Length: 293
Ligand code: ADP
Ligand code: MG
Image 1 (cartoon, helix red, strand yellow):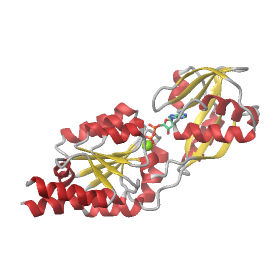
Image 2 (cartoon, protein in one colour; image 1 turned 135 degrees about the horizontal axis):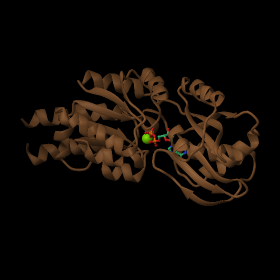
Image 3 (cartoon, helix red, strand yellow; image 1 turned 180 degrees about the horizontal axis):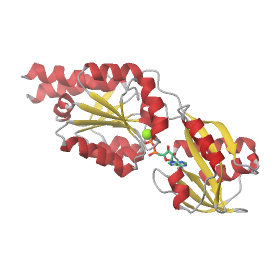
Image 4 (spheres, protein in one colour; image 1 turned 120 degrees about the vertical axis):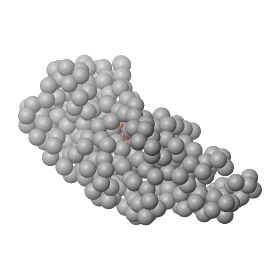
């Protein structure tokens, strides 16, 4: 490979809105055969809004929203921002004196007036010793079947309700998946969200394979497992929780609309945050390296 041709390739990438960290990245780009796609913020817009609030029996909805919003106000997670914004719309939020945020799980906050409030995945609530009644569990399933991300909210030993947030699939995601498949890549949806919610999104964009319910370190494991099978793995992501997997992948691709942590860890950045550019990058790498040989 002549350095000049590689530089031309990276220059052409820049024109296409693809920032390539170094000329050597083109080789990895050409060779990938599996592409892991993060769900939230990558396949979807990552702009979430609250679409439903379900209090458990005997719980006041306003109180549920206020406590959930106060707890989430200190987190930058897209789910948290949606919940906090929704709560602020209804009025001022109580103060929080301490906050823990187990990555990819939710938040545990000390909220003035109520005590410890937990917002997040079902397994976080159970780890914090909160129980979930059957009625609430059923409502949780119903919301997930609509592709929504659902978090439980609890305090004083029990889950007190749920908040469901909706995100929209990016308009180009389905076409991008088709093009990646046409280039011979096997697409896999990778997410910390639940299998039920992930399946709805996967279905919408034409992905058959889903790895769900993973913690950030689980995303790294998913990359490693495929590498151990001899696959050359591309990973596309946007979040802080994707950074380690982006670094582990043979080709890390960051959405330009994503976090600095993801962009720093990646080999390639899609400036416009458009997944179609991932297919462009593979085509460009193949064309560039073909010219050289
Ligand atoms: P993804 O892989 O889709 O980007 P994350 O790993 O960031 O998702 O989060 C996984 C799940 O953990 C979310 O779907 C949500 O249920 C829960 N979660 C993470 N952070 C928070 C938070 N701050 N508040 C509530 N729930 C959260
Ligand atoms: Mg994400």
